[in-house]
Amino acid sequence: MAAGYSTTAKFFHWTVAFLVLTIVPMGLLMVRMPDGSLKDNFFYLHKSVGALVLFLMTLRLIYRFAKGAPPPEASLQRWEVLASETVHWTLYAMLLATPLVALLAYSFYGQPAPFFGIFEIGPFTSKNEHLSEQIFYVHTWMGWTVGALFSMHIAAALRHYFIRRDGVLQRMLPRGMGGN
Ligand code: HEM
Ligand code: HEM
Figure 1 (cartoon, rainbow, N blue to C red):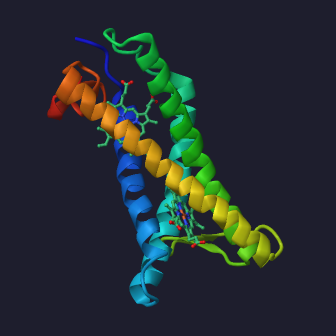
Figure 2: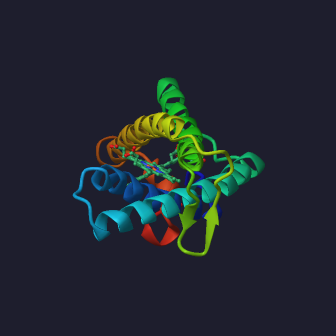
């Protein structure tokens, strides 16, 4: 049986996947909905979950560098290994940079960012609303890029499972769900 990811790596993967699959649609929705308490709550949750993703991804990256990952599935061609590793590492980078850029923008906005009502983050710069707007514009594009990347990633995982029928998806599935 091919080597799979460790339990810790799977925990990080599925926790972050769940959070990111929530936060991106929430971001897209919240900026387009009418003013009101639902919109305010979505903004609040978006910021808190975004900061949680930053925290988890920092731990995950340290873990990844310390422990590495199983070698690529044996049946993959060279271009597939290259493509998947490029998407994985770009996701790692974007999942750190996207919330960091947002927190910087929010700091220039002059407000502390919430973390589920437990504590607040910043502001750690002087107020500059114009700069804040410009940096949020960059954040918006980064958010869309994360969405595009995980769509490609999920499509590739499904292709492996349903079309290629190789063991790639099983490497990341929990043992109880057919993973290895
Ligand atoms: C992995 C982390 C994050 C992702 C993937 C993400 C993604 C997104 C997306 C897709 C949008 C909607 C873009 C649009 O269509 O206009 C958005 C907007 C926004 N995000 Fe995030 N976000 C993250 C973290 C954060 C954090 C930590 C904050 C905290 C300050 C934040 C604050 C905002 C705000 C205020 C907007 C609205 C921006 C505007 O309307 O100008 N985000 N985000
Ligand atoms: C239904 C959703 C998803 C499925 C089925 C899935 C499946 C997988 C699989 C099978 C792998 C291992 C690939 C290999 O062996 O080379 C993997 C790795 C990875 N996935 Fe996902 N994934 C999903 C969602 C996501 C999301 C939403 C993100 C990020 C936002 C993400 C980020 C990553 C990263 C960064 C890796 C590389 C892990 C490493 O090598 O350290 N995944 N995913």
